[in-house]
Image 1 (cartoon, helix red, strand yellow):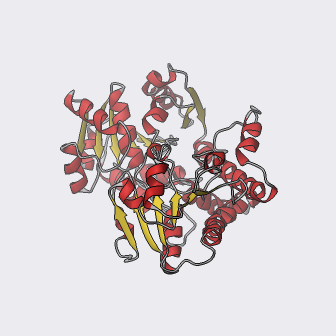
Image 2 (cartoon, rainbow, N blue to C red):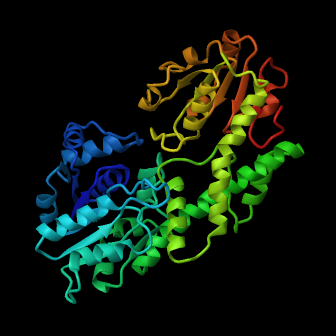
Image 3 (cartoon, one colour):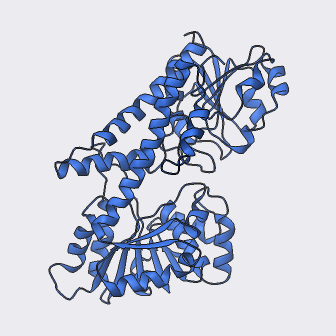
Length: 437
């Protein structure tokens, strides 16, 4: 099929490239000409394992192209995917849908043939009804068929998640459209994915409800981890014991810092904002947001305790600053909060990040980036393992001890067994275990 993806951010680019890889002809469109020029020379603007190779492969065989001409690209396509950003609005709660509605208005003005319009962007309950109204007005014979098709891609595992998803959700009442999208996703369905058709509104809510539930699991195990630290219990034992119950499952039961990234923070807030419109209280989700906001404060207090509340002029090194491994995304990463707080208290903060230097810290004179892991680790009062990158799972502690007289490590990802450090001259602290292990 001929597909057009409007928006080459994370969702649009990964989805468009993967659709090309399973045999479709895809045009990825973006109004940012610099980004399109970069993509045309194989310079991928996001870090996602395997994506660069997949782009080259499909460009070379002629199934994938990039353009900033939305109208021409949309007219040449059978199905148009809206995959523009829906960040949190200036009010700090609702989703900013301006890009989505601007695309709909442009399509209405310039496309005169019948098209299937698929919303891939994460949008609140009722948004597709508004898109339908923009595109079709009150016409009974609709030129545009508007469909909700939420994405469930994890950064760092997006290609795998696209090709081997648990489910494909399609929100539409049009049987012909459902059959068309079933055919589009057939190579993926044949590998075991469940094809689930619902109403548009249900599809919109499935996305938000799913993310809110996963965020709840993270906050739940983090809250249990706080209890474990005080009760001399190891949180891994609790998580494993819970996860063995198939009704609970082990995924997202890993204690650590506050959740971050492009989805959970904004989607939970947007869900709460939507619930207020319908005069419905989501007390559990509200509690999750509140707990997650306090999570960083809890870890900050632990850092201060480890350093005996003497922060000024201390050298603190962060290993990783992205919100999770295998991505270059620092949106709502706990590191942003922690580094800001520690530097304001007078600490000298270093950081090493496998995906490179982050502009966010450039204006902070107390924060310095190191391109070499062991250069960053030298001469520190505290080393904080913030992100679970593989290279942090096998650190050379003999080398670390040589470069640090009294080294302290705060492992926010529980990458190591605390027993390993009992006979060493390293003070090791972790999450959800007795704090001073």
